[in-house]
Length: 136
Image (cartoon, rainbow, N blue to C red):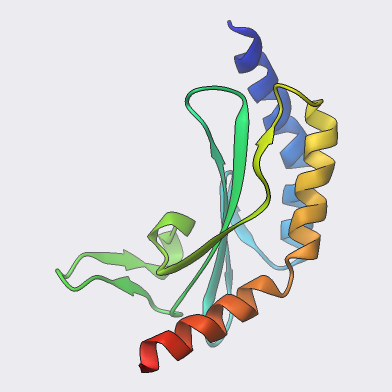
């Protein structure tokens, strides 16, 4: 197994013991690496995306209508399985990317958790911008 694949396993563990715990405290549910929070007016999503080319990680937020997404061609993404990359409004947070090939997985895990904590209001802001854009 390559060195960065070993680091990926360590990164998964660091995220599960830190960032995922915070997401649960914030009301998110799901299975790593995809999480959702169901609110009356919207669905908040967050996901962890790993590069296939090396030890980099992105954290991406998304918002969508509470009943999920239906594209113009009729493709349906139901609320209970919605992923961040299916959301009409998305945003990456924190380092872009988090590079766990350069820094320790524990330090990256702490920085990811801090980025999520700092982004607590981002979903609301994204939702308001998305709603305003839809009205025009």
